[in-house]
Image 1 (cartoon, rainbow, N blue to C red):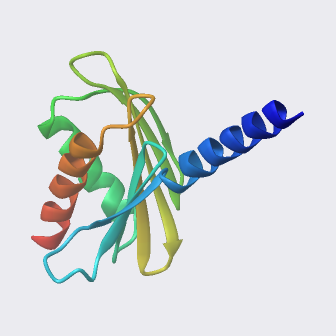
Image 2 (image 1 turned 120 degrees about the vertical axis):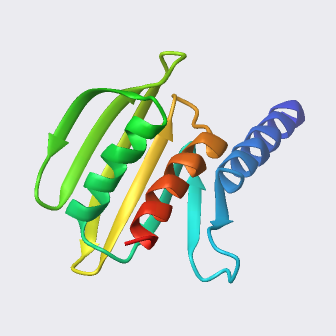
Length: 132
Protein backbone atom coordinates (compact mmCIF):
# COMPACT_ATOMS: atom_id res chain seq x y z
CA UNK A 1 0.00 0.00 0.00
CA UNK A 2 2.85 2.44 0.67
CA UNK A 3 4.12 2.04 -2.91
CA UNK A 4 0.71 3.11 -4.18
CA UNK A 5 0.72 6.15 -1.85
CA UNK A 6 4.15 7.21 -3.12
CA UNK A 7 3.00 6.79 -6.69
CA UNK A 8 -0.16 8.79 -6.05
CA UNK A 9 1.73 11.62 -4.31
CA UNK A 10 4.24 11.77 -7.17
CA UNK A 11 1.48 11.92 -9.80
CA UNK A 12 -0.42 14.61 -7.91
CA UNK A 13 2.73 16.69 -7.41
CA UNK A 14 3.59 16.44 -11.12
CA UNK A 15 0.05 17.45 -12.08
CA UNK A 16 0.19 20.43 -9.72
CA UNK A 17 3.49 21.60 -11.16
CA UNK A 18 2.15 21.24 -14.70
CA UNK A 19 -0.87 23.37 -13.89
CA UNK A 20 1.16 26.02 -12.08
CA UNK A 21 3.74 26.35 -14.85
CA UNK A 22 1.19 26.79 -17.65
CA UNK A 23 0.82 30.57 -17.30
CA UNK A 24 3.31 33.38 -17.77
CA UNK A 25 2.71 37.11 -17.49
CA UNK A 26 4.58 39.07 -20.15
CA UNK A 27 5.27 42.83 -19.80
CA UNK A 28 4.41 44.47 -23.13
CA UNK A 29 5.78 47.93 -22.43
CA UNK A 30 8.74 49.38 -20.57
CA UNK A 31 6.55 50.92 -17.85
CA UNK A 32 4.95 47.54 -17.09
CA UNK A 33 1.42 48.92 -17.35
CA UNK A 34 0.40 46.71 -20.27
CA UNK A 35 0.80 43.02 -19.46
CA UNK A 36 0.09 40.10 -21.77
CA UNK A 37 -0.31 36.45 -20.88
CA UNK A 38 1.01 33.20 -22.30
CA UNK A 39 -1.36 30.45 -21.16
CA UNK A 40 -0.81 26.89 -22.36
CA UNK A 41 0.56 27.96 -25.74
CA UNK A 42 -1.79 30.89 -26.34
CA UNK A 43 -0.54 34.47 -26.16
CA UNK A 44 -3.05 37.22 -25.37
CA UNK A 45 -2.92 40.97 -24.91
CA UNK A 46 -5.30 43.94 -24.75
CA UNK A 47 -5.67 46.99 -26.95
CA UNK A 48 -7.53 50.15 -26.01
CA UNK A 49 -9.56 50.32 -29.21
CA UNK A 50 -12.42 48.52 -30.96
CA UNK A 51 -12.39 45.05 -32.51
CA UNK A 52 -12.75 46.24 -36.14
CA UNK A 53 -9.62 48.40 -35.79
CA UNK A 54 -7.60 45.54 -34.28
CA UNK A 55 -8.91 43.06 -36.87
CA UNK A 56 -7.97 45.29 -39.82
CA UNK A 57 -4.53 45.97 -38.36
CA UNK A 58 -4.04 42.25 -37.67
CA UNK A 59 -4.77 41.42 -41.34
CA UNK A 60 -2.05 43.88 -42.37
CA UNK A 61 0.42 42.39 -39.86
CA UNK A 62 -0.33 38.90 -41.18
CA UNK A 63 0.62 40.03 -44.67
CA UNK A 64 3.84 41.63 -43.38
CA UNK A 65 4.88 38.32 -41.77
CA UNK A 66 4.13 36.35 -44.94
CA UNK A 67 1.39 34.24 -43.38
CA UNK A 68 -1.24 32.70 -45.66
CA UNK A 69 -4.84 33.15 -44.52
CA UNK A 70 -6.89 29.97 -44.93
CA UNK A 71 -10.07 30.86 -43.02
CA UNK A 72 -11.61 34.08 -41.74
CA UNK A 73 -14.73 34.47 -39.63
CA UNK A 74 -15.86 38.08 -39.29
CA UNK A 75 -18.46 39.15 -36.79
CA UNK A 76 -19.01 42.59 -35.33
CA UNK A 77 -17.28 41.96 -31.99
CA UNK A 78 -15.46 38.67 -32.60
CA UNK A 79 -13.15 37.71 -35.48
CA UNK A 80 -11.21 34.51 -36.02
CA UNK A 81 -8.37 34.24 -38.52
CA UNK A 82 -6.63 30.95 -39.32
CA UNK A 83 -3.31 31.17 -41.17
CA UNK A 84 -0.36 28.98 -42.05
CA UNK A 85 3.27 30.02 -41.78
CA UNK A 86 6.19 29.01 -44.02
CA UNK A 87 6.55 25.69 -42.12
CA UNK A 88 2.82 24.97 -42.58
CA UNK A 89 2.13 25.51 -38.88
CA UNK A 90 -1.39 26.65 -38.14
CA UNK A 91 -1.65 30.10 -36.59
CA UNK A 92 -5.02 30.81 -35.00
CA UNK A 93 -5.78 34.44 -34.18
CA UNK A 94 -8.86 35.63 -32.34
CA UNK A 95 -9.90 39.25 -31.96
CA UNK A 96 -12.55 39.73 -29.26
CA UNK A 97 -14.04 43.00 -28.11
CA UNK A 98 -14.07 42.85 -24.30
CA UNK A 99 -16.00 46.11 -23.88
CA UNK A 100 -16.55 49.28 -25.90
CA UNK A 101 -12.99 50.47 -25.24
CA UNK A 102 -10.89 47.30 -25.10
CA UNK A 103 -10.17 44.43 -27.45
CA UNK A 104 -8.31 41.21 -26.67
CA UNK A 105 -5.99 39.70 -29.28
CA UNK A 106 -5.34 35.97 -28.78
CA UNK A 107 -2.66 34.16 -30.82
CA UNK A 108 -1.83 30.44 -30.89
CA UNK A 109 1.14 29.68 -33.15
CA UNK A 110 1.18 25.94 -33.82
CA UNK A 111 -0.28 23.39 -31.43
CA UNK A 112 2.09 24.08 -28.55
CA UNK A 113 2.42 27.82 -29.09
CA UNK A 114 5.41 29.94 -29.97
CA UNK A 115 5.85 32.89 -27.63
CA UNK A 116 8.46 34.73 -29.69
CA UNK A 117 6.57 34.59 -32.98
CA UNK A 118 3.28 35.43 -31.24
CA UNK A 119 4.91 38.47 -29.65
CA UNK A 120 6.31 39.48 -33.03
CA UNK A 121 2.79 39.49 -34.52
CA UNK A 122 1.40 41.29 -31.47
CA UNK A 123 4.21 43.86 -31.72
CA UNK A 124 3.39 44.64 -35.37
CA UNK A 125 -0.26 45.16 -34.49
CA UNK A 126 0.65 47.27 -31.46
CA UNK A 127 3.06 49.39 -33.48
CA UNK A 128 0.45 50.03 -36.19
CA UNK A 129 -2.30 50.90 -33.70
CA UNK A 130 0.00 53.09 -31.61
CA UNK A 131 1.12 54.96 -34.71
CA UNK A 132 -2.42 56.08 -35.60
